[in-house]
Length: 275
Image (cartoon, rainbow, N blue to C red; front, top):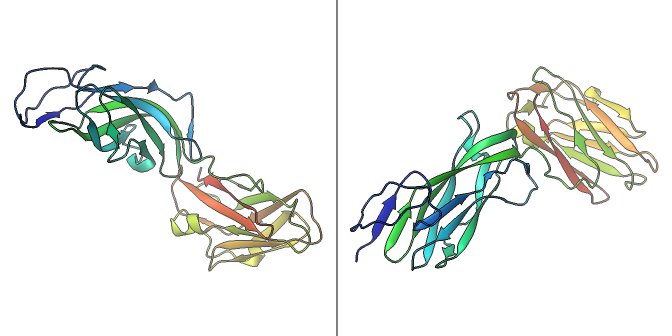
């Protein structure tokens, strides 16, 4: 017998008589050759940048031979106004095998830093292949609350970078000085929004830095897009620093990350949004 090729836009494939390379319409059938079950509306759990992969569906092998996954991808998100590259399929991956009678979860995770709320996500099974059968391009839908602009960092320094209005010229950062000690140094890196074209910090100088809370001193290096804070004595509590003379370039809704490190080996960061 030759290879049986099944191609269709949605869900699994029902049984029928077919010859080599026969095309078929699909049907909503969990007991089909490749059973596909959508998890439906999973927006009750927001998918964040630090979330574990979220299950959006299940693939089941209902034929009498193992099926090897060629690829499973995110076909589209929302109505076209959202970047389809915001999510990626975490599992299954190319080369995974679904044994006879077994099921494998389909999971997604964040691939970019943006929060767009609940969206209809279309998942496409680009192909699964056995010894005598190949199934290609069925799709299914799930509703996912995409909060990928949140939750990336550990919070070791309670670091925060404020959102910035599209017409804004200032931004505020804060972190805890507890544990920095005397002569401690904190470095805050704005290279992601700078290099990605979100906010231009190249005109910021030391005179544009205002210490709102803290006893130490702060300076800014426009070449590296880095803010440096030096403690004075054994400081405690929250350090708050305002940066002026920034130029917002990116559109509203875009998100960027700012990273933090210090001489006490704390690493942290935050994701902010242009509002």
